[in-house]
Length: 145
Image 1 (cartoon, rainbow, N blue to C red):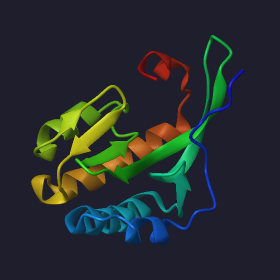
Image 2: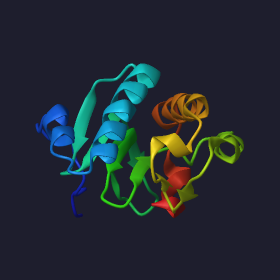
Image 3: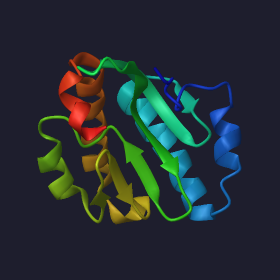
Image 4: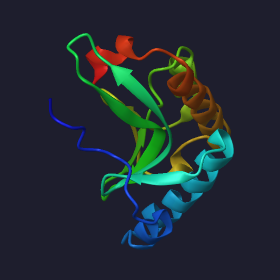
């Protein structure tokens, strides 16, 4: 069975964020770093070349595929900020409705800049979803991955 391509690395998070070219995206990345650290109590780790993650969870699917993934995290992409692990928890839909300007994909939350969203709601969302991702069985998430 193939290994998960996205795994923790030894790359320093601060160095990665310092290399983000777009100044707003870099500043937002630094702000997300602080916000997610405060909400999770976890130290950040780079997952793959561009994802900053906080905590992890183990998944095992009925197909036999299993692995570890970041619990919550983000990536400061050129076009937007991608936030991971923030769409699964019961109650997340209600928080997303109050968040502000954003889009969702199969497993991601996308925002253009932090100024577009309510940071208090984002804190609630990170806290709720981190707790869910680190304490629940994740076989039910198979259809979303």
